[in-house]
Image (tube, rainbow, N blue to C red; front, side):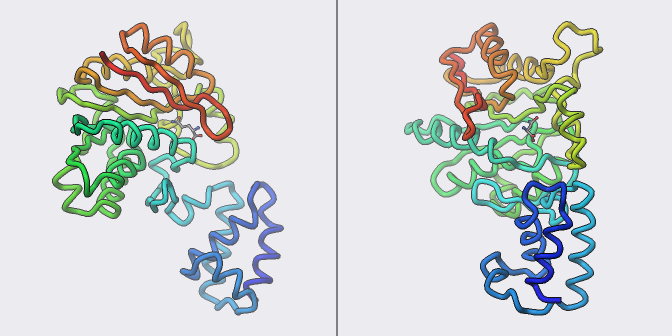
Length: 298
Ligand code: GLN
């Protein structure tokens, strides 16, 4: 079977995907270890038996709804390639806005006063690693990467070593197994986070497509003690304690940057102001949704 025949046949198989031909091409790229332009330029090449077997098994997995990123164990984010597995959320383009805002704030801070940055609920590590990559040669910043799941921290560490190098990781990154910032005593100049923020009812709907992302990384209601809590359903059960802890652990003029859902951005702003943060600003993502909120501790 040629590449062209495979592409035509398999694209038709991925009925539930919104991007069937892209999916098939990504799987081809992975198995043949070539980029997409090579695939497009070599449509008449024959696929050998071994490649075909692997491709068919990938297609079967994709048919169950498993995202391509989990099948090939990688995802591009902010121009970097991250290793991912089912212990971490797949990095999403929305989160690039969080990284961009953090980078702008660090660049604006020309006196180099941002020396310690915490990335809370780090997951794959894509947020702090993308920031660190930007400044690895120009600024001496220390990163603290926290997660409640040790398997996620292992992924973050692997990505940090792959992308920033083993030495950089050893000297400049600390991985902390913690529920948000519980028991952390370090003070920070910036705290960034993409915490679980999706209301549980929406999590259940999201996962119906078979994507199998870890519910723990999405469920913003997980920390409510019971479903009768008056706030249950707002997806804010981690965001509120995180805001409180961040206010305590940020140095004066410290910056807090958080990704939230379009449905709870306003609640996040209200709570930031209730706790005492100033200069609260919300930024919209590419589809015009309120996605990232920044606040300063004055
Ligand atoms: N919108 C994100 C997703 O679907 C939610 C991420 C989160 O809860 N932090 O992956």
